[in-house]
Image (cartoon, rainbow, N blue to C red; front, top):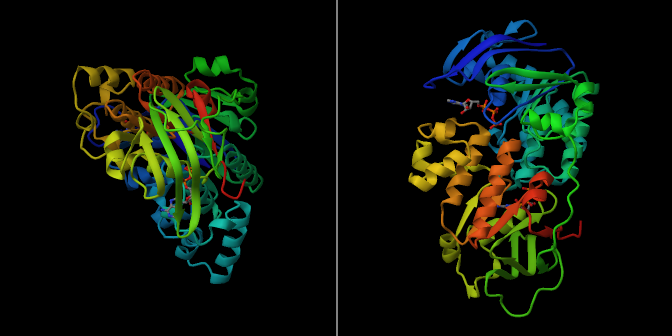
Length: 471
Ligand SMILES: Nc1ncnc2c1ncn2[C@@H]1O[C@H](COP(=O)(O)OP(=O)(O)OP(=O)(O)O)[C@@H](O)[C@H]1O
Ligand SMILES: Nc1ncnc2c1ncn2[C@@H]1O[C@H](COP(=O)(O)OP(=O)(O)OP(=O)(O)O)[C@@H](O)[C@H]1O
């Protein structure tokens, strides 16, 4: 189905090839997982399969991918579009339309399918993916996890024989990951060929036919699905990969909070001196209330995890803290009430979609380079990339760059919104260390995450949000 034979690919302007002798054959109906350290070439390999290389990205290609015996480079884009469905690392970047329903219909409309058929298919997909509640919701107003679920559904709506997923679970809750796994099982039953690039491997244990670990742009190790399922975590860790065991996380102490959307005990009286206090904080979008916190205390010098299902209001809370969101109620820092502008000055954030906060034309320029930032670049394995354009970095490299900028920001409040997307095992530890160092300096650190391994290693206390309707 997909054949890649000894491909070499060098991005335009890069001094070394990103794919260097990559050989990979994917059989029809097979589900293959691509894993490997950040920057090893997983996304690039997917771009070769869906034609973004060479149709979109510029560079030097030797060899190429074949789909059903036809060179991807020779296939017209509409034929490629019918044969492949792709979910990118930042799904919001791939939306063409405005609402969930029109996005699901988009590909079929482009292929000139009859309106009746489009309606039927969109209805089926909305049900299969549990997206009924989002039918007419505007895509830009969905939470990160909700967007990722819509992107997965939209990629499958026209039933392409090949589906390519780039870190499809980076923003998903455990329940949403289960729904995604069910989608993979359904696709396999329908005979689809599926390639998934991932760092989080545990949910792929029972669905992968083959697992391929890349390193330096070529295949380094390969396991059959059975071999993979039988691997122990130590073997995977030795390969620099994340384990298969679902971390059962001892719940950290609850953050001091209560309110309609918050699980936790009663707060202390008065306004604590050292940290953030939220009082009667409420947010609503178009009359729909999404955040309702009577009182919460986020102490300085500790990492407070904010958890809860997709769409429950975690990023909204992050925007409240950092002064990016209008709301009712008050926020105090170290006993002093802060206006929105004061909050913007007191805080830094690593956003869920870090590409939104890369503004300059080099890694170096994103940070103010001095001895301290040089050392941090080394810790985060970015030192060799300092001349590079930030948007040319891999997903995990971009993530670490924004983490570095937040570390150097010298703000009292630093929020990390899903910082483990694109992040391999080694860097999970370096990012945890950055958060720990900030907390040790007395910063109020907030960690929003669905990643139990990250939470187990980093969270000092937990603020668990529940949906306003109680779910
Ligand atoms: N600008 C907006 N307009 C309308 N609704 C919005 C807007 N921003 C967020 N929402 C809605 O508010 C709710 C909370 O979104 P938020 O991004 O805070 O969730 P989250 O808990 O961070 O989710 P995830 O885990 O998926 O990232 C969601 O239902 C979302 O669709
Ligand atoms: N447009 C580009 N120009 C130059 N180099 C690039 C470009 N895109 C990616 N690279 C480099 O190619 C290498 C592989 O990137 P790729 O995005 O394929 O890695 P990845 O394995 O998907 O990483 P991650 O797990 O961090 O998402 C990285 O070192 C990256 O910096």
